[in-house]
Image 1 (cartoon, one colour):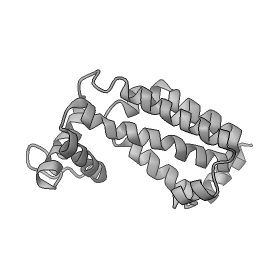
Image 2 (image 1 turned 135 degrees about the vertical axis):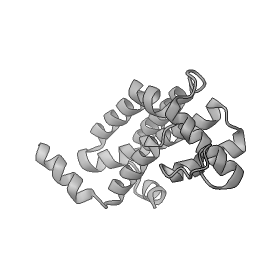
Image 3 (image 1 turned 45 degrees about the vertical axis):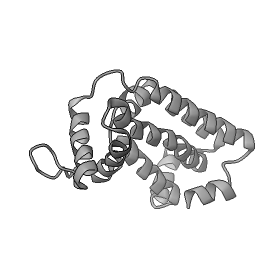
Image 4 (image 1 turned 90 degrees about the vertical axis):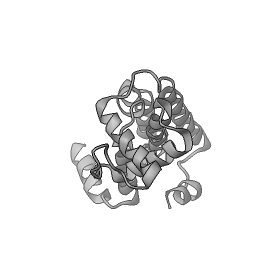
Length: 172
């Protein structure tokens, strides 16, 4: 539905599409630039164990045998990437980078509706180029970016639109 809305209603003028695409490409390029840099952190390893278990058995389990119940959908997505590309640092971190890249377009759609296209363009460039996104979210294997996508998708669909618009209006 979101793709249908993007294609049929569009994000605005073609140059806006180009700018949002450029911001997404920049987020992707910066996200993949240092994927193998620091070794996996403890909380990343937990997801790797769950993802490897999904790839092997179809169930996200930890080494002790218990089912890992946090971020189950992310464990299955990670399990797919581990099944396809192995369990190296780049392979397990690439889903977060891809989600962060997709999040650029969703952020534009949401902010454009609430605050207008110029503000939305500024926001997506700040989001795409910020070191917080690249160092903390996209370059580490985290389930936070899919959660951001779900939240923004829900807001774009209008499930929270009235509450969000009320908050934005109260700021002005």
